[in-house]
Amino acid sequence: MQFYVQNALGGLAYGSLLFLIASGLTLIFGLMRIINLAQTAFYLLGAYVGLALVAHGLNFWVASVAAGIVTMALGLAVYSAFLHRYHADPLTSLLLTLGFALILDDVILATWGGDPHSIAAPPFLAQSLQVGGVIFPAYWLAVIAISTTIAVVLFVAMHRTMLGVMIRAAVDDEEMARGVGVDVNRSFYIVFAAGALVAGIGGLLGGPITSAYPGLDGELTPLAFAVVIVGGMGSLTGAFVGSLLIGLVNAFGKAMFPELSYFTIFVPVALIMAFRPQGLFGRKL
Amino acid sequence: MSVRRRWTFALAAGAVVALLLPCLGVPTFYVSLLTQTWIIAIAAMSLDLLIGFTGLVNFSQAALFGVGAYAVAIAATRFHVVGFLPGLGLGITAAVVTAALFGLVALRAEGPGFIIITIALNQIMWGLAYQWVSVSGGDNGITGIVRPHIGPLDVSGNTGYYYVCLVMFALAFALLMTIVRSPFGLVLKGVRETPRRMRALGYNVWLYRYFALMISAAFAGTAGVLFAWYNQFVGPVNLSLDQSTQFLIIVILGGIGTIFGQFFGALVVVFLSNELSAVTQRWMLVLGLIYFVIVMYAPGGLVVLVPRLWARLRGRPVVLAADVPLEDR
Image (cartoon, rainbow over all chains, first blue to last red; front, side, top):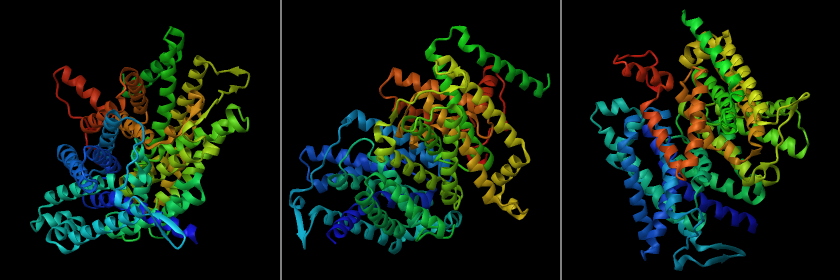
């Protein structure tokens, strides 16, 4: 019992981190047909920038938001300089984001070196909690709470604001949305910025769980993509449910088959593709 | 000279040069890089069969390549299977079986969906190679793979192995050209252009794609096996997403849907990445920049770029039929 509760909590915490990456991935794809392979690199950049800010004495939470803003600025720069021209051309934009991820990885490696950096949780969350024989870090609960809050904010923004209505209209039928006067280009910028911001914030936030090292982005990529496939491409709700699901599968996979943990992700992906290829919350392909 | 005869002539001249190269006093290092070029070109041609002729942008080509490489590496170091044909057969089988499995999952989607799923599949295989230490050696990979003898011939030397890879490239090239020109290849082209119309004509589009994927895997697996023997080392990096992208960049550079162009694409990329890594530590960064340049300025590949530059040098503007954006090709 203890084993299950422990791994379930760990999986949910890890899954909520995945949501911070996958939400941007799925929204950017849904709206612009851009498969953003730099999304996990944004996360990594957020972690390193946040770490540097903390080292300069900034508060952990402030640092993570500031790192998110730095990441967002960089993402916007790349988007407006290059990617913007290639939306609706998935292959070209994908290769551009991959080239950008390579550059970003190398800059990170050159700046911060190849050694892993462990990141400490804020002091008041650093202790472990013990509930009925299950011991787990208090920080896990904080991550789950923060991610859920961000998910709610994104959901409200998408479904209860004028901006969200416009974005969803552009997702459904870009030409028609343009025709009735929606500034689709503006929503492209906003969605790309939001995706980079959330991933960048996630970097430092997830630091105490994943730590930061070159190559972390590559390790997160299959998980984030699995989330998007399972949840349904373009669906925010799908990204949330998919993240928790993949987080859980990953946690139990790691605990039960440590050497095959990546392969366990194949199972939900294959099952979804077999029975519901559009994903749990995706629209018909 | 007719176009056809000119091609035959160019091909024959190329073959003679390729055959004579190791005997002309070319430094061993470059013979070795050319060997690598033949191998990588086989993998790139296998990907071109999918992208250029079937319309499947497969990002798990490195997984198929790597599975072939790992299969022969594990067989050689654990089970002492060291023959040429057994190794090759094993690698091809492993790659085809993997593709058969991948196809069942990935071919449920089309277009960008297919891309996303194959990225995930490729990374899952990478994770397997990275973490399944007891079988794959994890990050340390597998070392000590010995190049096989072919019958009584010892081809483990640099020159000998060069000829093995050259012959395998020629075989793969001839086979792939035959396939894309056969009725089967024409159906694949139809599937790429208008899957819906092909469906209406009664073709089982899914099945054609599935077969194309497995045929492509056989060639990718062949390249993987040759690479394992060439490098005498296999590691997770050989089936990483970066490797898949490298194949894709070669195909774009060589010209999508040309098959023969992939040799030139591979030549440029293999020599460039080797020279780069010798000159600078920051070659990943340079590689990223090169991706930008190729994708933005040479989406039609060298087959478009070179004639255009040539025409510009001679002061004649040209518009080439192949000069269309990636998306429409």
